[in-house]
Length: 248
Ligand SMILES: [Zn+2]
Image 1 (cartoon, rainbow, N blue to C red):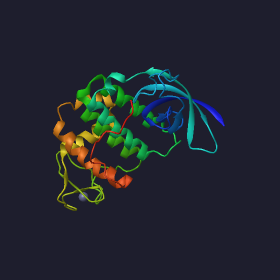
Image 2 (image 1 turned 180 degrees about the vertical axis):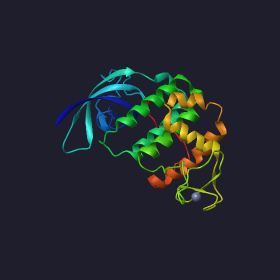
Image 3 (image 1 turned 180 degrees about the horizontal axis):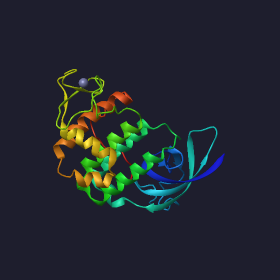
Image 4 (image 1 turned 135 degrees about the horizontal axis):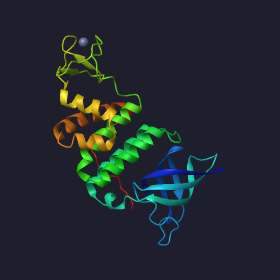
């Protein structure tokens, strides 16, 4: 049994026994961790409001050799996102994105890049709810990229030539792109959508959402394509961005 302290983001929590909660955390040092917070449902719980979804906290927990479920000892709030998480649009979007994280990441497998991306995405959307669509597509793109599911969309998968400025690209069933000379399909990935991808791969969430605040249509189109790829990657439908049954 070992005691671990790590910076964490609360992804969600749900009721367990009479007084307890299960909490799903994205930790900086140990990836996705599920833990029991004993007595968290009591009025005077030692966890206070530290288990609110999307809060940035310092979490101390015991890890047992015999169980995947850790025992949460202490939560210190670094930054509460309570106001943002009370907004239904924010809650819905990040519940969906949190679900994707849990689907993509193996438990107890840390990923510093993912942790920093998630933290920056929450901070950006919490400060300005108008950035939610841009942040959503950014998040989807980076999850695919970091999990190895995003093909190189800068060039044709058949001839290897880079796409020229304004050249149209066919989206193949394996999610690779092809130039018109090599292969055509009925699906296209337009230049605006490809520009979004190139931009998201080099900008921070904040800079990306500022640069593309007006590109609502391209963001929607790209997100539809990415959701199909995500479904293929995790083997189930993700089309509906439905909120979890969150217990706040
Ligand atoms: Zn080609």
